[in-house]
Image (tube, rainbow, N blue to C red):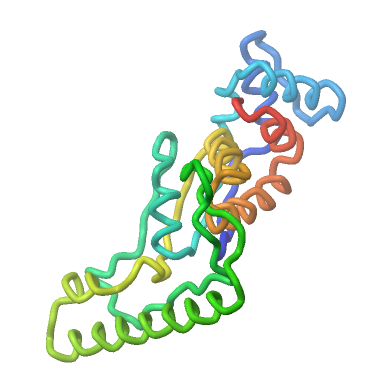
Length: 216
């Protein structure tokens, strides 16, 4: 999985000035003391609109089952995804590093401990075999002249997809706070971590404040 930062609009100073405009004030340069203190206050008190001013655009690549979970976040973002109605190049498939057990008790916990080595080996074989069969079927359909928009239906959720997504600093912080939670799916969290690393570099003060205040 991959999160590539394509563009950034704004910085920590934009956040501070967006809040400061209510008092008809403006800073031309970021002040490490007063501006960072203001940003921490905004995050702590849940004043999210100043964090909605800066924007960041990513090119994201992940298996479909991760992308569809990611797409549950809809407010404040726009995205465009590659379409296999028009693209019929060779698909790539995701292979997990390990297989996790079904959790005991509450299914909302997602998954439990890793399965045994014997199970890991068998499940890896099972997945590879499934990928090969799906790919062979997909190729055969295309050779026989089937439209790509129909041939794609036999491809599994482990197939990689790519999309471009643009959203505010506030959106990315909400998404990462949710997807980096210990109860979130591990694979989705791995993609969110890549986004978080980029955002922490682009907005160091704002990102630190927002990640300390999960409801900001």
